[in-house]
Image (cartoon, rainbow, N blue to C red):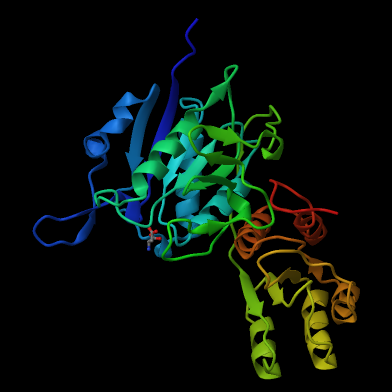
Length: 344
Ligand code: ASP
């Protein structure tokens, strides 16, 4: 018996991939997605049913906003039962933030959501967009014994499939724009697509739960040698904040000057969450490994292990948006919710 043809919904948000050079003005403009197969005739050869939705006003992803993540989550929610997989075409600049946000918003995801884009527009001969798009669709439509091979939010770029909430944009001029140093690639596309099955998240069989509430009342304090007390005090006392992401050195270390610890303790006592992540892009925070992080642990700073900056920001927005207590938020920050975190 022939396998059922799988179906994939393509959601075009904007970014370089969907642009064409205007023949007269040479300007890069979003192209009409209805004529997608005209641009990429290879798509007709797929044994995958393809439908598409395009944002009315495609955006450069540097204009990304949590409200757009809500829009995307709503589109997936409304179409979840009609498609086997989803491909989101997105600018690469903030793709890791969107992938991380969606991973938290889509609880119990049992189908693939693959984000992709390109460094060169699809209408340009040397574009990386065609391969990225074609393989992303193939991954989103891949089934084994009637079940999706992948059931998480991922990024496919330049022959590699990554867990979205483990990635960051690393390179603005090479085709391999993303890195995931703290978690292995989920698949590699060569002659065949080789899935790293043991690395993939296992679907839990529960019904999809979509979380649409996000709260962006947070600040980021990136430390550097010589940062002044005046700056730190002003950032930590920003009106209305509920959380601070502290970007520290190495394994989560920072200055032990008393005024700094006192300022931090003051806001923690007021109920503001402080999360410690490292400025290193590989490795993790281990509070208490050095004397220069023990003081943070003592006053109640939460260790962020190997969370990327992108995952930390979106996880906090997601948790602040839930109607849960501070104790639950702190616990969830240290819990691996969607494969974003290594717990020791
Ligand atoms: N600035 C573009 C964007 O992120 C770059 C890209 O598409 O890769 O939308």
